[in-house]
Every structure is written in structure tokens, then in C-alpha cells.
Amino acid sequence: MRHVKDIIPARQSLLPGGFVVYRALPRRQLRRVGGFVFLDHFDQPDISPEMFDVPPHPHIGLQTVTYLFDGSILHNDSLDHEQMIFPGEVNWMTAGRGITHSEQVVTRQPRLHGLQTWVGLPHDKRKIEPGFEHFGTGLLPALDHEGVLINVIAGELLGRRSPIPTHQSLVYLDIRAHANGNAEFSVEGSHELAVYVCEGTIEIGGEPISKFDLASLSAGEAFGFSAVSDARFVLFGGEPLHEPTVIYWNFIADSIEEAKQAERDWESGNFSSVSRYRSSAIRDESDRTLQ
Image (spheres, rainbow, N blue to C red):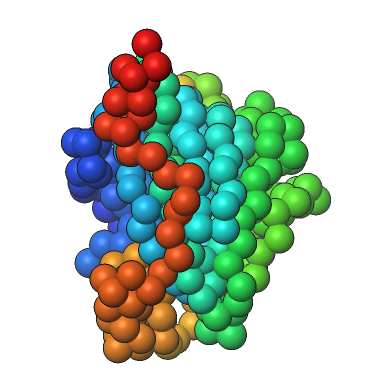
């Protein structure tokens, strides 16, 4: 049975507009978990477009995964994909050799709550063509296991496999339990795994883990937990991401020089633009003109 190795509280970080995110990965104590190299958790009430407007920015060598519990976000990218994402859906973008994208709230909403993770591509996949896929409501396997509700975002659990294709073996589970609920299930012994708590408090081997905490887990072929309160958390990880792997700004690369060259390319305007992006200020001005 896996146990807790370390508990790392997420640290607050500000996005443009003053929107607060809780960054759990990467950290000095833990750079990655399987293929996952980045995890941002956001949970704020009464969100306006001005508060969440992430302008176009570049990525190489990774995949971005956006998953919401409450609210909605508009995705635009340099391949001309425009896609709203709602709770229970997944936006899965492959940067490969290079992509630019933006993320925005377009209507005022009572709560915006969700996760964005990045999956580092294996060495031989880092230069593949960029792409984007959206997986709508009802496409992810949903299980009721011992009274615990589990959505399989990526990977497989109890014979149910996510339809999302990946370039390496991944685990990404959205798990909900009522107070005093508990469950156990088998996991791949070779996978690196961690949990991140989005709501409430759980215990693993008697160790409490609360909202905004990431807990790295030991090796083992089984995972179990109990819920101290109503709780929601993700179990994530997978096969180790092998070297060489450099995490630098928005990039995954084989070397720091390659990553810095991508940064220079961005600063020189050599990445494709996001033609459909309009800042919240431009949208507001357009709305006033139309009135």
C-alpha cells in the first residue's frame, strides 16, 4: 500500500488581472510526478473577464490539460481552435515543436474552480506537430467504487480507460468522497504518483492532507484513502519522464540552451499568433461601441 512521503503546500501565484492560482508543481522539493511537470489549482468567487485574461503565450515540448469543477474558460490557439470548456470536460493541447494559446473568462461567473496541468512529452515526441483536442461531458469514464465517485481523465482504472490518447503511460483521476468514505484500488507499481486536494481533507495511512496540499506517494501496487470531510482530490502521475528533461518557463526541452532559444524566438516574434484573441479591454470597448 502506498504511503505519504512528503506534503508540499501549494504556493500562491498571480496571473494577469490579479487572479490567484495555487501552484503545486514544479517545486524545489518535487520537480515532476511521472509525466506531470506543472499543476495550477484555481478557486475564486465572483470572477469577471478583467480578472482572468491570460494573453497569448508560447509552449514547446509539452501538453496542457485544463479540467474544471465550476465555471467556464475560453481557449484560443495559433492553430485557430476556439473552444469553451465547462465542468467535467477536458481541453488537451499538444505544443510539440511550438504553439501559442490564450485563456479567458468571457462572462461574469459566481465561481471559477479547476486545474491546469502540463504533461512533459517524452524526448522522441517533443518535436511533433502541435494539436488540440476537446473532450466533452460524458466522454470520460465515471465509476462508483465503494461509494466513491471517480472520473478517469487519463489512463485506466478498474478496466475503464479514458478515450484521451497519450504518448506515455499516465494516471489522472478526479476522485470525490463524502465524509467517512474510503476506497482502495490497485495501481501500477512502477508509476510515480501524488495526490492534490482540491476540496476538504483526506487521510492516507493516517496522514491528513487538506485543500491546497500536494502529497507525493511512496512506491507500491495499491492506493487507499479515507475522507475526513466531504472531499475532492486528484491522483496523478505515471511512468517516469526520463532525462534529458529541462523545465524552463513555458517550455520542456532537452537542454537549457534549447529552452532559452525558444524564449528568444518568442521575444523575436517567431511563434505563430493567436488571431482570435481579444483582450478583455478590447471586448469592453467593442461592447460600449455597440450599445
